[in-house]
Image 1: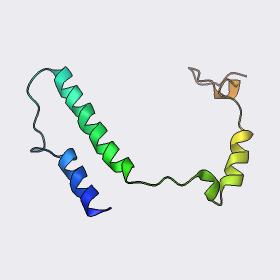
Image 2 (image 1 turned 120 degrees about the vertical axis):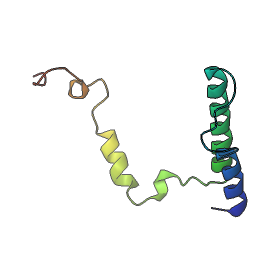
Image 3 (image 1 turned 30 degrees about the horizontal axis):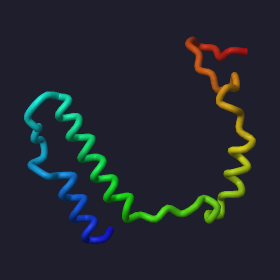
Image 4 (image 1 turned 180 degrees about the horizontal axis):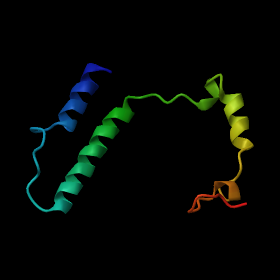
Length: 87
């Protein structure tokens, strides 16, 4: 990881002492956590490069496998309670 990005992420991930709780309500804490998370991942993903799946040598096999998979609405994908699956 590049040093500048590592330092930026470290500053975002641990701005204070670990375990400190922000003052205020739980909603304030949740909002601060979401903001810190967003800053962290924005910094992380802005320095990354995503390789298209077609560039991998397994793409023809996996794309054919995905195309032949049953749809999510298929009875084989249903979840039931009890010891025996539906017939």
